[in-house]
Length: 253
Image 1: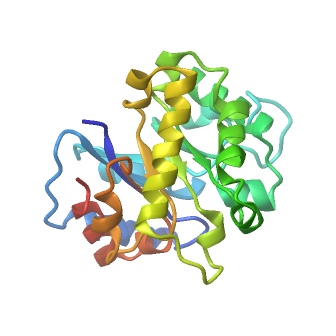
Image 2: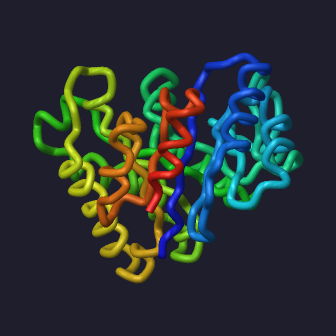
């Protein structure tokens, strides 16, 4: 079975102390994970070492950075390289989140370089893709998202592609008052898998974990994760509420 993942994206939230308590509350809960299940905490840079220490004795738990530089090293004040992440044993890094694309103008080409840097360092990219409202309303979402995959990932050989985690974000349904249905989530996830099957092979496509990043909450996670092509979620707001994220973890199939 493909890896089923509950990934938390704390974004720019929580103090160090609040983050530490959140991890303690989740890790002390009555959660039983199977070998095909994984929980990942995407925490701000200042909390990476603390979070990694918290999960170090826990099976099936890991920590992710929320971003990295596309450069290997150099005079880039304020940036964080994958070598730095590797040196503190970070296993995952979120690449191309919709907020990074929108607010920081990250291009597909830049994201391809970030993916390369991560894989060179043995860090698994959680690669985000998804369409804004204008694209969804025009009905061109499939072509739009396929282009994101093509320009950022299709240079990879099959063995590397299989190690990338995909997160689909229906940007049009996040904070807009519009709601993506479970059927729409499954439809896009199945389409993404078909794109990988066409470019690589059905076998490769079936090994790629594709997470849903569209306002997963405690009360809808079970239904969303139950879709055949949805392999868990990249969770924002609900991931910084211990009780909610615990329920989301318990909803993994």
